Image (cartoon, rainbow, N blue to C red):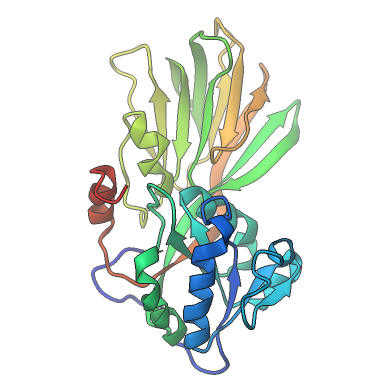
Length: 304
């Protein structure tokens, strides 16, 4: 959680060297250049580090690099460092959240809201090694696509799920339920269902509110609604939401996307179930930058 002072989530390090798993996005970090710099700092500060087997060739010349299969790498480590933008952080968090390991993102993207450090701040990794950091827990959502009573797809998401029109440029009608009660029928291009973390992404672009990521809640925001009165709604994190294509919808061409992933076809009669996940991501925070200061700086373009 982004705090003005150290919290009860502070971590104190004692004992053997910290073990760091490296999960860089090598599209953002071309040739692993930033990750290699990270290794230099980690080695200087006495930490152990390892990459996954598929990245072996990229880091073959890095001294003292351990190489492990992914299924062995995450249980081995004490913490995870990823390099890239918010998409890189999302992928790393979703792959590892069930292990309960904390993550630190080193920014290498344009708008890395989730970055704990920037590339020119790698010297601050000493705070990670010394335990001078705190954990910023983020709620996740569990999303299920249900067809004829069967769960076709289930996924934990960190940012948002988007239900929107497909390839046809036609407006759609979506029913949104909260705890099995109809809340609204949105006639729009779609809806965004987001976590507090995801509220600064597509939700914000669609005119929705930005929630402090330390909050617990679920935001539903219509995309280009055909109504003056269709607005975002913030639900309790304990509410269970569901979305379905309205029977009277003039278009049934509907898709969904989970955390910006590939489109998935939604059929008439399908139910999209959304509720708070049993898992929470744990982001490592070293600096004490207030969330809304980060938000203003990045959206103003000063860090793009």
